Image (cartoon, rainbow, N blue to C red):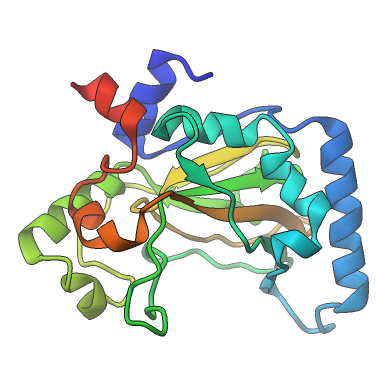
Length: 243
């Protein structure tokens, strides 16, 4: 469960980092599965920065278990409501390979270009499990812009949901100072879909590893227009705190 302070933090900042959520045995099994992915399809010797794998959850049970075989999925539903979320069918294994002296200049939101049917690829929440230590800054950390989930919703209320396509993933909003997500292997990131984020640099000596899941509430897809303007449409628990 999440306490009221954590719910209020998510409402205000748009994300939470929850330490030690995934048990060590589950993390270790997933780490071996990532090693196998890398062995089968290694990054080229000159690859620096982001390198991703996108296995199907059904074919990667050790990776799926980080979310659905641990307390992580229940903690995500503590934001949206019991039995509201659908387990994702695809997983992203995200590497950040040093040296990568990159500093993102701005944010983005996911979902562009749109899906073949024309619907943007919106979802309810990004769930991420850190798979390597990222306590230091510029160690391949994800960058986030706190509070931009609310600014983005305000932008779409003013310009209409069609503005998503014109923005191409980069809505022209005023940005606060960014923060780097830090933590240890097994920590859980829960972030609102509308939270601005980006890939950071990696000036450490180690490859950054994380596993991400784009999680939807049941019934999300046909409500994407309303969701862009109402950030709490999919979040029963947050609406309760804010009421």
